[in-house]
Length: 272
Length: 274
Image (cartoon, rainbow over all chains, first blue to last red; front, side):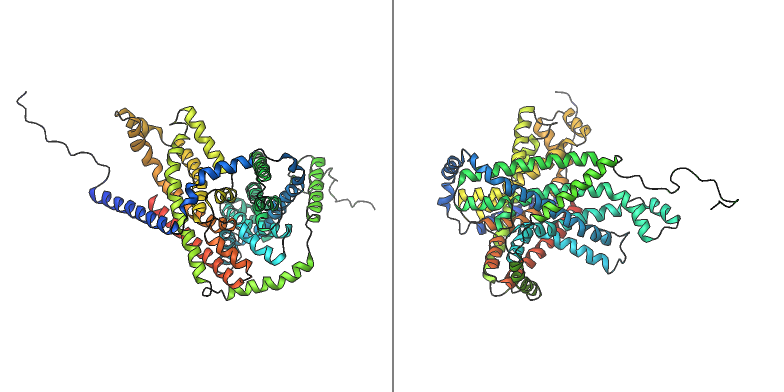
């Protein structure tokens, strides 16, 4: 042993101060408590026998679902075509409404910042906070079951999505181009046509195709509430416990979604 | 007519500027336009509308709109309260469980941390979870564990895994390598590297994403009730089936209000964290 005095033990490095640590731990503890309370509330009326039975049920279900009933495919082409129509026409209808709403909501193109803009923003928020399936549920009770309810439901949900992304794109345009066009003596409509629209057109096309892709997904299940498309067949098959048909419909929906995703990503790459 | 002596010489070609067309090939342009028109005609033609039924429904639509002016929160309050409790509790539990499961899967799906076999397995899990829609998953879970919020909880947790694991993996792949290297150079093990080199870089984003997913899960919880997975969606479905439009309007207003509050709260918390 050398005669040197032992150095003071350096204070151990810590990422946070003791207080910060305590606050964080309390936060996490509260979250855990909240989780436990919620879990208890949620499972108050749960019959656990059903849950312990689930693996057997799942195995049973799987056995019933395989193999898919391929012959049913013949009856699925028409609903599939309806589904595509719902998505496409719904997107077009939404575009027709969302483009003006987007222009009214953007800070730099709105005619009135205090009156029109909040109104347009409210339309966007209201449309976004209700799922298209709920819109469909409402419209079916009003219009009766059918494709039209589906188209309008898809459109109502898409207005908020397209409008929000569009007005954000409009607010980000290059103001110098607007100024240059205005300096040539262009009127308000001409400025929009020659300076604003060319700048947002690629973004708008991208948004529309992106939403179309989402709408294909959503329109496949709209039929569950009677709004047309392949979901009608799905509901009929589930309700009659025709599981081999359900499997086939799942496969068709999966293939449609994959194809539409591929198409939309190709189109978006070509655009941008 | 003879041109007056002072007139300028006639110029060949167009004298006015025109915008170049979007698609240069005129034939392709017209073909696309015609194709789109033909599709529109066929597509709109396939919408068979029963106008008699729609006229009948019109009166119902007006009653529904009237319901928004005078929503009825009281007479079905018991059902509404139960539906909302189910929705809120399954939203929270599903988000917590989904986040807990998606963290290891997200780490496994990040190419810079995981070896190839693990990466492929985790990416496959993400792909499966993302390609199945919530409502379809809900049908399957209802068939397995029976009606009620537990099926909804399982559905939302399943959907959360795909969403969060994918975004987390992309985040981890984008981190600053220098920090990881510095920690590793200090002699840290793999777990310590993860905790001190990676976790501080992705934690704010992860919290933000979890809150965003909480928001989405509540919206979805209002929908999956339609196929029997519990929540306020079942209550709404029942109200509409009974043609109780004022109660349905009350439920919708509550959903919109909660979604708005959740959106504001989560964006506020995200600003505090980042």
